[in-house]
Length: 305
Ligand SMILES: NC(=O)c1ccc[n+]([C@@H]2O[C@H](COP(=O)([O-])OP(=O)(O)OC[C@H]3O[C@@H](n4cnc5c(N)ncnc54)[C@H](OP(=O)(O)O)[C@@H]3O)[C@@H](O)[C@H]2O)c1
Image (tube, rainbow, N blue to C red; front, side):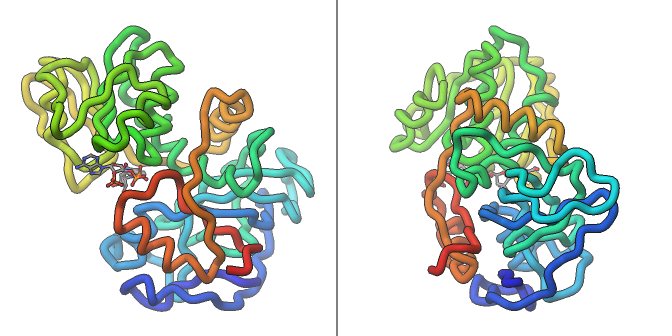
């Protein structure tokens, strides 16, 4: 099978397309014929070697966490899925070494969920990592309906899902975003949108979900409020009795199934930027690193270019 592989840590040019043996699903695993995967900030950290202390698998390495596709084969004991089922999954590539930028991916059936209905299977790859990260961070924050939540990076991949999920639960969402993204943040469900030019008033929110590497946003939280950050390099300071925690995404097929249903019901919207081929993974890394992407950058192995 074809896969995008990393031969050594370095720039995007270290990513090339290679032939690898097609994986064989073990007990409890499914083999998925990939419709698409996506590029995430963590792929850039792994590719560059920035995350090398947390990576223990040998080169050549296949990157990628998100996956959408069709079940091609089931290992022994799999009852959750049958051959031909459309699925989505998240593979914690950095920890497990199982990357998704490939034509076929074998992973535990418990990590997968039925793909959302009414959505193109390629576009469904925009859901898993960002959706799970947003949902798990919100669970840690535990916002009560009627409480006020400030979301930074509100039109980013994770922030955008967080705004939608929180607004759907009756939370009043304040968004911090670029001036050009004010309307987009409102369309996702933000009640009010702030920018660098129009800062969040001190103490305006009960809660903060920080996704943009803007730890100073904790100033917008009231005394004794709560903050969750997903950016470990820029944790907000615990001040004024504010409870600050970090959230790290975890693989969870059942939670992903719930998020997938929300997409089917049009409660959650998937935002896709551009679709690249396997040979385009390097270019997708450059685009993501440059910032300004709006919508997920997807990798579809069936694309010729
Ligand atoms: N802890 C975890 O488990 C976990 C999981 C997923 C992601 N993450 C981390 O979370 C962060 C967000 O991930 P993501 O996939 O959502 O990335 P993303 O799609 O690039 O979203 C980040 C958003 O923040 C915006 N932003 C950045 N700096 C800003 C600033 N100074 N002012 C206003 N807006 C700003 C970006 O706008 P521009 O594009 O214009 O810069 C973008 O819209 C990354 O650091 C990622 O590594 C952590």
